[in-house]
Length: 390
Image (cartoon, rainbow, N blue to C red):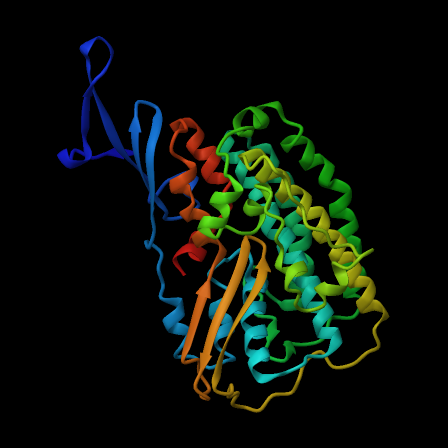
């Protein structure tokens, strides 16, 4: 943390007893253990109290949107899965769904359910990362070992089916790269049961921990009105009482069946809007995603053998037009605005990432809090820096 000496940044007043006081400007980051990457926070503080906060982004900007526009529709998938590196499968799923909607293409039923299964496993992997790293920022090292134990179990089955541990590249326009390996569904079901059985160990260290409660309860309260004003989505929005989930509200794949009456899907919400509520939503969503994944395994096991993708021509050309396709990514709304002029490359492909809005709201959330609470609030906003900068 460094302070600036620019006189324009210094506000001098007279405090109690006639002593001169000054507002100090602090830069947290862009290289700081609490920022999960190169994010810079410019804070104006009065003693230990934050007066204003400004997130400064762009240190990791890679120009992904312009790179989309010089690659064909098969190649953009490899770029799309990298902006939120914890949600790679969900990222690539969104872009292929956008292309398929422009083509008017229907993929085989087995591909629909396999995509949904893998998307929910990817959601659990994403949430476990934050459930392990957030306590680390509060001073607790043990939970991350438990969270990574479960991540390794799930990564094993994801790697078996796709060949990748982080950037899966398993989605293709028209379906999936190849069929599911023999016996894989059984291994997924066993892994889900194992992870579900061990989750209470992790839960007891988080929601059952007095120190975690002391650091997070009533800290960083985010109102539903502020959430709506800043376009915040995902677990952060639902922790403030916003009952919104694209899987249920504008369903894609087969989520309409999963979120129907009697299905395993449900939207997890809280009303407190503080750091603890955001943690609780994330933890409960892990259980819901495991339930949905288990349901998908059952459906896939009952479907007859058949194709898992649609054969495409060597050059895929999308008809002229435009579309916006949004999915419920682990961190919130992930949307692709695709404009085509009938070529083999997009004329424009705009990305609406969840983390950008989720971090923008820090300028409203941090003021009034203590510097010591800044890390607790920042960690509970659940963002990936690459997803901010795109």
